[in-house]
Length: 312
Image (cartoon, rainbow, N blue to C red; front, side, top):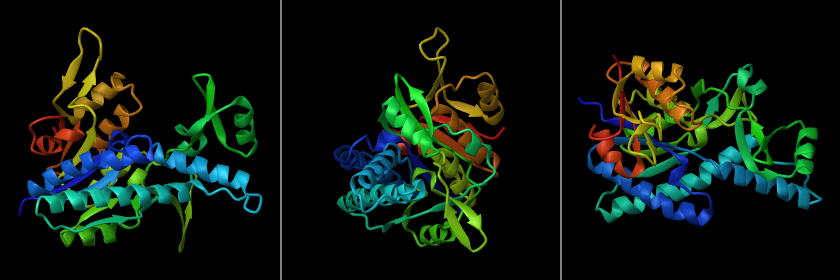
């Protein structure tokens, strides 16, 4: 039987920057997902949570500042869980509505997903993920006194946190069960809630996992045939605005790795995507990764458009 299982990774362009923008933009994502369902693909969805998780973290910090009876700030792991819930809520309802409008009944479920990270991951000593609003120098100094990392960003200051690699997905059996039952599953939003394994307990880590790496891990563990990374471009482009600008169409792992070595993916959003694509394709046989435009998801899944990465 042909493996039609696809993990779809939605980028931050799928949700916008505000609550109203998200509510409207999920309709575009829902349309793309419905197209894939009509094309008889089995769908598992993961998604970005930036800037939503930063908005939540800022709101929770401000609440603790204003409420003298509650000085406890919600940890990043809790903020990540909140973002999975409210993005999943909007997304699953939009998908459900779009499917019903097309005469398709297919259950859609969001799973709050925890992802194991290594407490000794070097990322914890070299934080890179920018989060939250811009701060003044005085505010930044207060953050540093709390033990948080801060970086200067275009004349302002931003908090940065670790971005460790995903090792395992704890809810994978639940996800697999729902997928095998024919449901659409939204899982590991924002890269999953980063947790540390403490025997029978799981402890939230102050981190944000790169969602593309978790998408590759999720696709591998579910034995999907394709990882579909959706952005706002039809293809990955190298040497942009130069004479030798080029759209990447079908490339092999060795070609993609060579381009990484040549520093062709300078963007902080492009590099994780191509690395995640390589990780997934290398992790099994007959696997394909596609990077393309959200609005052309079906064409990408059918191999008609997009940067297509295959094994040698």
